[in-house]
Length: 332
Length: 156
Image 1 (spheres, helix red, strand yellow):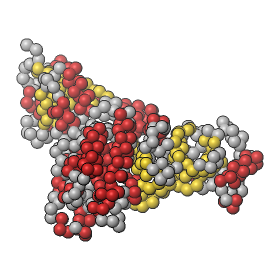
Image 2 (cartoon, chains in turn orange, red; image 1 turned 135 degrees about the vertical axis):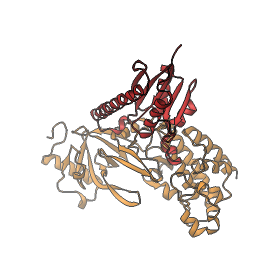
Image 3 (tube, helix red, strand yellow; image 1 turned 90 degrees about the vertical axis):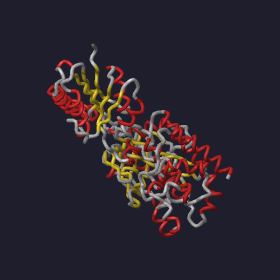
Image 4 (tube, one colour; image 1 turned 90 degrees about the horizontal axis):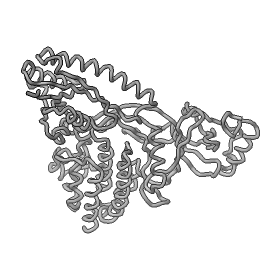
């Protein structure tokens, strides 16, 4: 028996695991022998077909999760594994402990960041009954690592869900966008819920917001990022919310390159002040590009532009303005 | 007559040192002034540390270096003419709160009539993403003047 666990690494245990796995896998995919892991400290070692035991519950490890970031597509995240809960066959994401402290970059700016399993575990507990977040729980392995067991969400990221590719923007804006906007308002409300509990998401971007195809709603994922000191701890989240709003309004990022290639007649009308305050190649003043965007919505974008004189400093202001803008969009 | 009390909020930056030197050059040697040199240690959130021990060590290291800095700055004011008994130093741990709100809390506590800080000269995007302590002080201070010192203002 493995100390402290109800599951041993003997022949009987191996047979039990094979029996469990055969309920959920094709017969030819059931391994003859499982490597059983109870201490996940060396997460690189946790591999395909291993069984991780957490709180007496066996999880059959499948692949490393991947993430596109900083211009790199599909970077494997070796500490995040897809898995099958062998007790009920459900798909899970197992997030192992990776204490990473680093400098993140937004535009030209660098700031201190860390991955915090404690933070994510705390927020998972806070949002366990909230519809607009991923769900799961945390459990300690035998080495006291705080492992998070997340319910797998089947769905699209906002990049795909709010894409206007292949349709005229005005058609997207009048048909798909109003629906997406209503759903997005609920997602913003969810972030306000976090902020009111003095928590931050920490890494708000459009591939951390999924449209759950089963539940048919938006859900935030991956909230393990912590940030260094800031005069306003919520500002990174607010900036992320603004960026997603501009993306879903444009149906894509409207960059200066897009203007050059597809709308050269507008290029001379867009000034530096019209561009995103951090991402200087993205147009924030979308009203200049799409004149049918209601002013109430465009005013929100301008708070994220280089020409802004006043910034949002709390999510409630942003949400209030967004609700007013949605009225204008629906009335348009 | 009661002294006029000035609080200088400093960190390890050159701009903060310029603010201190400004006070030394501007007021040092005049009668009727006392000063508090304040440093706020902006401790990153607990979530930024792998353990409480790591956090404690971070704070201790910081406290040591900032205490030494405050002593050096105290000597500068004394050399400029402030009486020894009228210059005090204070070190505060921010523990997640904005630095500006800790400074204002201390300013109220010591009833300083002027609050002096250096101007970092940050870009607009930096101000947006990280906030500006001096801006927050100018906007939120009450019953107190706020002097935001340009590093190149020349009174040293």
